[in-house]
Length: 127
Image (cartoon, rainbow, N blue to C red):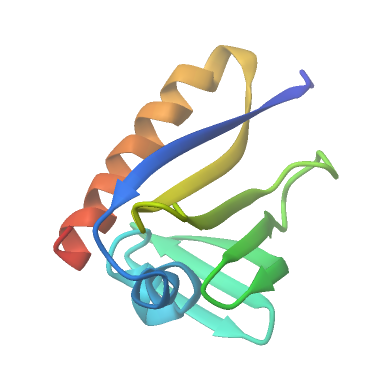
């Protein structure tokens, strides 16, 4: 299997970090934009899309700041996907940094998918 490449994308969000974090870290928030349905039990999150189910575990989080997930079926121990909320000290603009991993030949496709997903998030929060 080819090594995966880490990539980070930045999106400007017109929402408070507290509000944005709820959409990134709770089953109800993630169900609004990321998956058809989401259930969680402790650090385990089950994501449902069109009849399929994927399980991810929260490996690191800090309220209103960031949350990092690792897919249960992921072969690469270093691979994860993370949402990080950054507030500019001067302007108070809020940005969302999305970090993920993809195989080299799937990198552009992965970026397009995240772009689409985050557009759904922005629509859901009215940003």
